[in-house]
Length: 124
Image 1 (cartoon, rainbow, N blue to C red):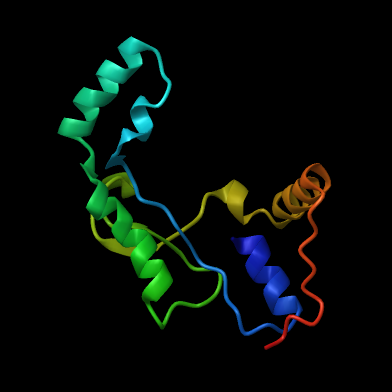
Image 2 (cartoon, rainbow, N blue to C red):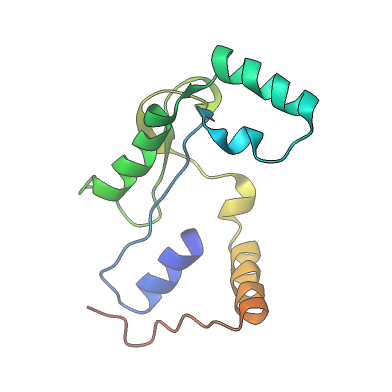
């Protein structure tokens, strides 16, 4: 998200890239493939700690619809360790903020997929 935002700005685009995470939301993702014991533990944690899937979706909805957000903004829950709560601006991890890591990930992704995302002339 941050690398895309940097590339959009460098191309003079008015498009902005923002990101979001749901925190710990009780969804079926925790049960998609782990061993039985892990699934049982996740079922208990989903009932005790997790927020609802609807609450987890709020960060994404906020990031997508809040008109005042600047490019590069990251949104997550406002509760303890960003695990649950209402959306607010949060900080991406230190690794996510590393421009060299992001640039390399972008380049490797282009090489591995054979897809290039050319932003030349992206200004709108």
